[in-house]
Image 1 (cartoon, rainbow, N blue to C red):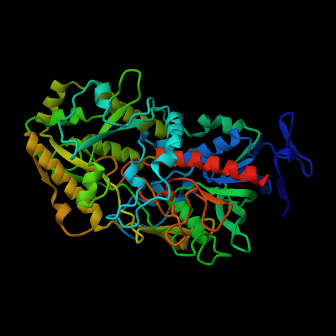
Image 2: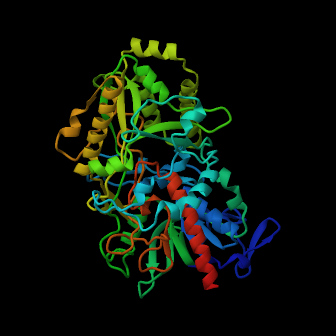
Length: 570
């Protein structure tokens, strides 16, 4: 079959409103306009060549493409979906949960330009220094880089999200004009999330600089089906992609970056096994292992005379002229080491007795979230709902809040946003089932361990001791924390994300050796000089911090590394 070939930037000439290839004449402008190609509308199969090919136009892929574009690199950015949600393409994310109960896999990621950040709440905070360290009491911990190695890139990511002052510490209490609870700082400390205020920051409308750039080709509906390794298994020669209707794409590039998320990155490496029979980068059976989430759960019930006051003090804040912030309670590193536990966070929540089920507003939210496809109009409905909740948090008065709490017999609870210990048995593996493109699907075997639950039990006890010392009330930890099993109960009353934060981490983890990981400190796959991975799948440990700010920082660092590599190669 004839392949419409676009060899490099110089081969495509803009002649009026049509793009002309010197060998094939006029290309059908219904499927290619400037440097934006919709493979689904192509009239022939396509071959592209580029300096660098990025697979996945989510937050990491878009940020990396933007850095490389500014450096003048010839970039090809592949997106499996289109510019908006499509149910058929989304179905490629389907897979089985063969471990602990988890969200449906095709509901936990979005497959169109901008990725899952199209429904992201904007919650941002860097990892802590201890998260990068080797902790003797946490098996498989320790990144091959430190917080200092990432700090300048955190600031770049922070500024790109317009998060205001670079301050995530307890100093925010003074800036808000608030007096925090007088916890012993050797027991309980506070850090602050900051919130990106802009919805869908990485969508196509907000990425027009990439769409219009003459050195970036964006290919939509290009679902990567495999990577072709060189015969010596030391690099990648090309990749193949396809539409749902069979139109094919081949990309040849000097460097390739996978930025598809923890499940899809692992699936692509495992299924690309024509040269490495165990899959690319999987010589030591590390690809797919160490899948991590931030499990959510109810830690304790607090009996106190004024539960509304605790929630109000720790609610999300909207400072005048600044970005929204919200506090989180954490245990100091020295105490974590003393107790032999993980780095987790907790917040307060007001609600009725959970035995009475979720509230009407909570049920309405969950029904909207799961019953409606995330098309543009329905995402707007979801954003409007969230905006209404934010308005209530801004404007509810304490007298009214106390009245509502008393009338509805609401209680105060401690909710966990926990670190999961890196666990090699928690993993993504290939399924016997195949998708519409003929590719093996991914199965998720998510597993927790005893340390995850012990951490939250100890957190609750420390917090209870502080409540006793300060005379704030009585804290009772939940029974499930001491049931002797590693699994956490799925409690639909916990919050909008009752199982975990939809935070997929690990599966291509960063390590100094291929014996215990997949990529090196520069996010390059061990043994493959031109294959790199962007996103939270490279996390060695997950901490408790939401992963987006960190994955953006790593993407910017990878951009610098790739520019340095390509400078040396030229």
